[in-house]
Amino acid sequence: MPRRTALLTIGLAAGLFSGLFGVGGGTVMVPLLILWLGYGEREATGTSLAAIVLMAAAGAALHGAYGNVHVDDALLVGIPAIGGVLAGTWLQQRVSQRAVSLLFAMVLVAAAVELLVP
Image 1 (cartoon, one colour):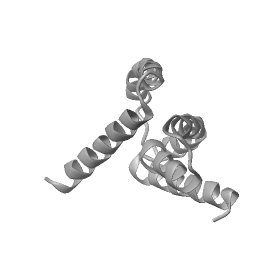
Image 2 (tube, rainbow, N blue to C red):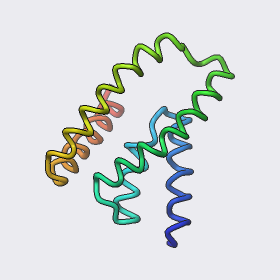
Image 3 (cartoon, helix red, strand yellow):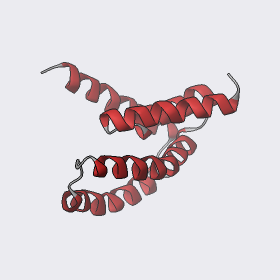
């Protein structure tokens, strides 16, 4: 698959999942950037975070138009999340890419089990 087509497909899938389930960057974009385009974990994460800015703004605006956004709660979650992303990025730069991959895989498996087992 040509690079541009792969990137467009990844973006479409991430946007679809983001709008439908509230996820898309870490769970869709990062694995596909790694598998389809050979990105390293760090580059996939950074690229995904940059793309999420655009996706989140569009998704929040549209959900806001439907009345689905609690702005005060979003701020209470989002402001501390900035500290979390700074700490997570700092930590990611200091552990091996293999460790990041294994931790990410464990998170995805745990999320899958949580969704499948009532």
